[in-house]
Image (cartoon, rainbow, N blue to C red; front, side, top):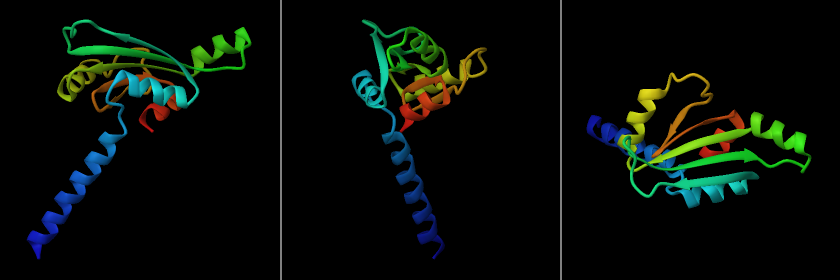
Amino acid sequence: MKKVFKLLVVAMFVALTFTFAACAPSSTDAAKKKMEKADYSVVVSVRSEKGDAGEVASIVCTKKSDGNILSQIGSALDDNLTGTLYASAKEAKAAFDDSKNAEGKTNYTLVGKWVVYGSEAAVKAFKK
């Protein structure tokens, strides 16, 4: 009975791990589509070579506004996200650990091979 219980716990852990990992976009294209669907303007920068820390691309998102220039500036300051895609989850975790206490980075989090920070709403939309 104990073996069955242990096996069941391991199976549940594996299932949950895949569930959470499936939420992270696997590429810049997937991240761009996800954030545009959540009504964010998106700028993607892809590196021609892998960076020193393993970074391969970056994404910057700001919430779209009603067209008023003051609203756009306020939106960019209040509701935004910056993310970096790494070549592997291991490199992302290392970069996350190295700079998780950096100043000015709110809602700093690791999402699969991505390290992202920004407003709570933007990070939630990225993880969704």
